[in-house]
Image (cartoon, rainbow, N blue to C red; front, side, top):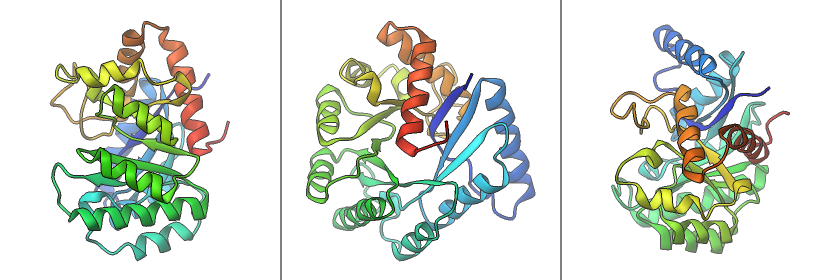
Length: 263
């Protein structure tokens, strides 16, 4: 029986050429397997972390399967997009998605217009390569929807680490995106995310850690890791008043469909 899938994690920082980082990732994956997690999608945010994600998928996939995405995060949208396009077009066997990309108006580390252009370019790339699209959205819903509608998103698209409410969830679903829930759902001040759960069809739902960020309660404040996607899943199941094994099985199937992972 397949275990949990972590639909979005960042395990790759400082991995390339660093034996100590390699050992740390291997230990993290051992803990994930012990917690019943056997698949992790490692997500790129810039050229370096995208290369690292692909390297991890090549070097450390084993009992825990690793898949990779490459992309340019809105924080880093001022960086050149061309190397990301070139890397994606190589056609690495473990490459399953483009992103994370999108819009972040909370921090605005890159100008808004630059973010929108980088986002639109990566939407086109995902469609060109027939890969899933992984979207980051924070405090930019109206512009996010405008870009998604004007560009036309791929059939396989997910809003990762969803932090909106019921209205935002319904709009994303209408446009054609799935929704992935992180440990944020366990936070005391995340009432809107918990309320949104009731509006997300089970067939469009994913669970993730977004590690090393946003560790779920009762681990909040610690360094997050894929082992705790089961904590997120258990909380979501209790919130929806459903059997946790049904939630696990369904989200695993959903994420496999989203990224076209092997059966």
